[in-house]
Image (cartoon, rainbow, N blue to C red; front, side, top):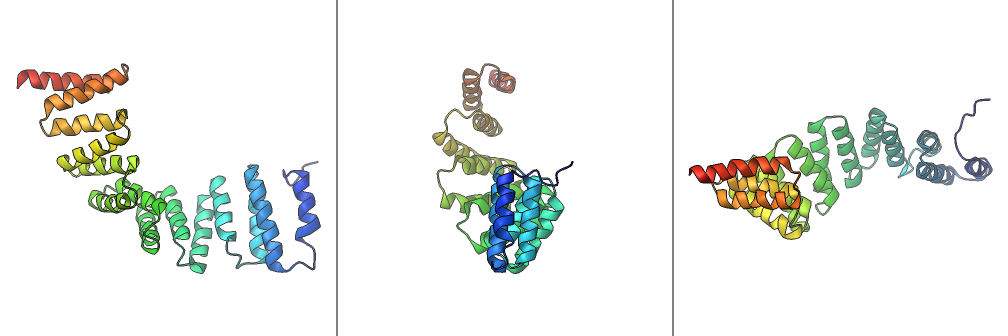
Length: 250
């Protein structure tokens, strides 16, 4: 016989013994259902968790955490469209929540809708200018959209909150590079390397930035350092040879 739930039996016993007792008010019953959803999510029973979250919202539609929980579960099973509609519903109920706006932006990003993703991340940052996660998502969206001036501004604000963030400094260097601001790119990349001196990707970008500024010896030395760190890095070997030839022919 086919079983409707894949849920462990101890959870089902708890549901039928607690969640549907007539003396429990609708808010409490909704909380029971939501907590069971959490337990199921931890066990990766995502479809069953969705059933409990959906039931929780039917019992008590204004339950504050219900929509986020349900949308997150939808995302886990790849139902991004349903996640989007759920987050939109939650945003109507909690328009001042920066977390909801950030989640909504991330969902738009998953759907490939950069414009709406950026809009929601902008709102999230405006609602809470200290949210590092909102800034990170906004920056990633700007970079994907090739809006480098906007990315640079957001990265600058982000780094005021977290000056020693390696990823932020690396992205700032990359954004300056894409914007043809090579001196500023070099400055940001060198600062990133004070945090992680042997990061091959950042060293590679620095070598290219130096080459663009005709600083060929420094560029060659940077590519050589990468080769010492990783003898199998063929791109570093190729760029080292190009830079070496440039020096010889200068």
